Amino acid sequence: MEQWFVMRKGAPFQEIAEKFQISPILARLIRNRDILGDDAIDQYLNGTIMDLHDGMLMKDMSKAIDILMEKIREGKKIRVIGDYDIDGVNATYILLEGLKKLGGQVDSDIPDRMKDGYGLNRDLINRAYKQGIDTIITCDNGIAASQEIDYGKRLGITMIVTDHHEIPYEETDGEKRYVLPPADAVIDPKQEDCIYPFKELCGAAVAYKLIEALFEAFGRDAEDVDYLMENVAIATVGDVMDLVGENRIFVKQGIEMLKRTKNLGLKALLECTKVNVDRLSAYHIGFVIGPCLNASGRLDTAKRALDLLRVQTQRDADMLAGDLKALNDSRKELTTQAVEEAIAQVETLELDREQVLVIYLPNCHESLAGIVAGRVRERYYKPTFVLTKAEEGIKGSGRSIDSYHMYEELNKCKELLIKFGGHRLAAGVSLEERNVEAFRKMLNQKSTLTEDDLTPKISIDMQMPFSYVNEELIEQLELLEPFGKGNTKPVFVEKELTVLNSRVLGKNQNVLKMMVQDMNGTRMEALYFGDIPKILAYFEERKGAKMAFTYYPTVSEYQGNKNLQIIVQNYR
Image 1 (cartoon, rainbow, N blue to C red):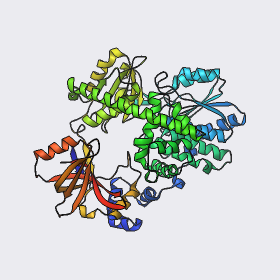
Image 2 (image 1 turned 90 degrees about the vertical axis):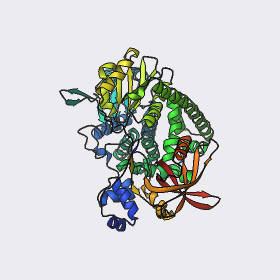
Image 3 (image 1 turned 90 degrees about the horizontal axis):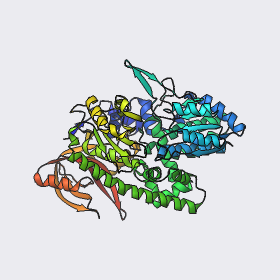
Image 4 (image 1 turned 60 degrees about the horizontal axis):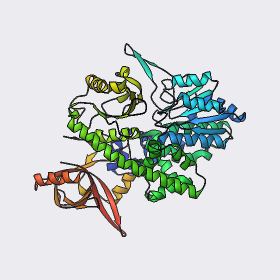
């Protein structure tokens, strides 16, 4: 059973509303997002590129700049080694574009998910060494590759790390000792002694900061690379970073740039997936564009997504965009099958009695483990690991709930793991097949989750009668965008509702359209996109009972007519 609670955070809402020319409702919503003080509110509503911090504040940034200026001037061969996901691919593209524009002799390599696994490895370094590469720059990886970086250094390669992941640590007697790779420069805002004010950047944003600083060091106008913000925006949303602070500015600006992008590949992908560019939002990046770019690293090679970003002709752009869309369609089918198999396993083996779900699907494509874990977690609201059979042993991905820090919990089981990494809400693991059961047991034995932790919480911004819903309010709500993790869409609630009528729509029968009346007699059209049979059975059991809905108001337009409606999220 969900716990619903309405936030009651106090502030002088009328005063804030007058000062910033917004409605008191908006002032309350901003307070609920813990945006406090005039400066923070102003940046939240009006933040621009000018409010981004100086990349030179990052630890080792000046070291990296000095090295790269020398390498570029001397014509040394530089190789960017990224990662196979949306963040790694965009970070690779940003570094390639920036270094090329400055005259760098630069190319790239991206690990193959199946053959290489995540991040830097000896094969990638050996390949670079044989090809006469002088300098390797990692992006969206490298912080946990101490041994590999040491190996590269011993071969005489200059090593620069740019990353955004947690710094690995060893714990003795409750004391954490952070372990940094022995690179020539390590740029990662999560380092303890890095004074950069904003710690939650994605890998592509860190890469962008390096290129921006490098342009300035060469006396070039950093505005020449502003267009790469669209790639930072795609990576920030795609890597599910919190849309606060600098991330919010990057995504807001990047979406505007993406609407009029000159990138042939991105343009072709937007057309091919039928995204309405004028209404482009973070939603489209997260659920349409992003999955297509990610599908290449999952089912094929991420180099294909990088090729799309770097494409030079319209014909190639259309062809690659079509390929990526087809790959993503195939990924969706495989995911549906794997999710059904995972749920069947949970139900048959009664795994749902455990606090942490560990599901072993030997035949699931290893690249889908994270998506499947995410779907299972949504269904059961429990931290979930999905393990698959890989070429070497078992590989898996985990997705967590707010009250369970996945990386720290894995640290408690590290004797059973060959390799692991990640952060609070997501992680990756490698282990031997004989340790799968022991891993499940140990995670559950060491879990300190309570009943309350495992109850989904529905956080509601405010109760709002239907009479407040009008076009002006809906326009004002757009000021809060982009929505996503860390800046969720507002949730309103209204109680004592009567459902006057309802009908199922859509070719897949996946939309419920209702006419709903509140206690003051105001009627509103309502749409529900969740589990239709379940909500209809709920209505049937409680014939004529008053309902409470959580909702978000929108305007639907059809043949020039505008119609107010609400999108229902939860009901009881």
